[in-house]
Amino acid sequence: MKIYVGNLSFNLSEDELKQKFEEFGSVNSVNIIKDRDTGKSKGFGFVEMAEKDAGESAINEMNGQEFEGRRIIVNEARPRTDRPTGGSRDGGSRGGSRDGGSRRW
Image (cartoon, rainbow, N blue to C red; front, side, top):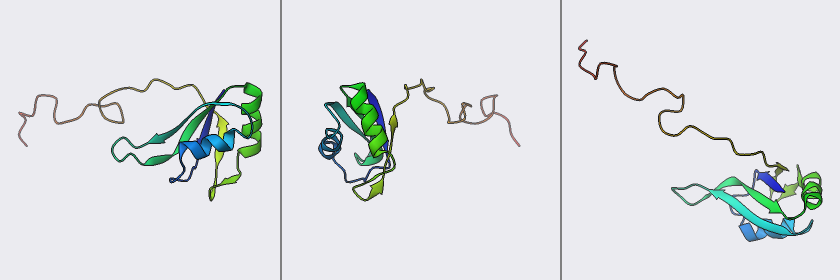
């Protein structure tokens, strides 16, 4: 079972997060998401529990609890959706006029 964990302390290590979730059962993997440019934590991550029951217990017990000075958000991870690549955030094109920029004002 894959679990989303949000509002994490930016100083928290993957080992510390794993230890916390191991209180509920076997942990297959832990991944704290980091900024690709700075390598610093983005304050959220994912924990994969071996057993669904253990994951549900962890969600029920930990969601909204304080951990390392922050009230964390814990819930079942949603499937990743495909995001468009390239272009601007609004899906439009970047740049100037449609005629290649030859228009003079």
